[in-house]
Image 1 (tube, rainbow, N blue to C red):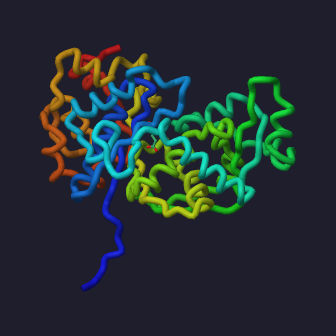
Image 2: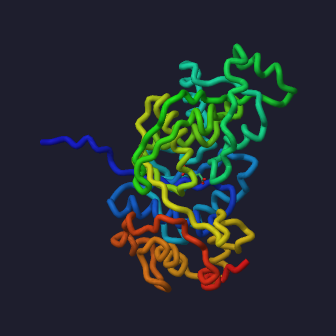
Image 3: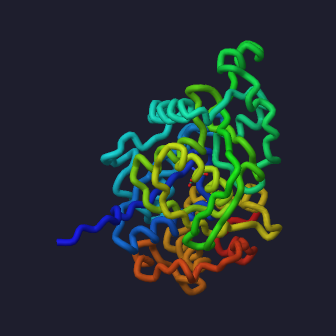
Length: 331
Ligand code: GLU
């Protein structure tokens, strides 16, 4: 008998409860779900709620409801359990602390007392345009230990932990965008992974969790593509195996920007309130991926056999006035 060494196919939906789901997120989640379901894999859902200032009450529940309303389901998650409980990041803090300790032992981290803004930004996923200039390394080698760094700060402020991005490229083959390479030490420099010893942020948590939960595929919006290189450095440092990454184009407003409130209310909750059926909304998302005809109404389960990554247009989808009118979400 031959033994297969390929791990079982597992993908994840990783909503952040920082605002209601809109058409753009919904499209990425639909693609991620279909990619796994079309090959008979397992879908897990993880709630990424580490970014406290931005996390809104009820938004986690709302995200689950929105995803279910549009016809997506998951085999493991906060509301259904599974072998890797808990599926909520704020309940997994000790795992991130363990990973921090491992990185510290390898002297890959140093305490940093630089700008608060930079440190806060490290808490959530860096979406398009949110990465600033490369860090100049001001705190690298500056303090003998954490306590010494803390002593330079006013009461109530704690040093962050920054990861040393060593010189050298990270290279990976993206399932949609092909070969990617970047030298993080030049583009971003050393980056924040925890705002204080117990305050791990998105970049570390997503790596720890995807590895622990056995995610073999991470499919998400391509504004997170640059973050993947930072994540690969963390996979390497922690001795973990990275998943296959697939980054798909975003839905943008006619001005080319990320969808925002000023472009009209495209939140699923609002569309639902206007009386739209999920099949109408999913129909539009599917049309944007080349899987449905204009005006067709369809549910995700009926798209499983139509799923093809290569029919998704390579350019971002522009949310046209025509579609907005159809969905009743003009600004
Ligand atoms: N929770 C992140 C977000 O909603 C997504 C992270 C990821 O897919 O890696 O922005």
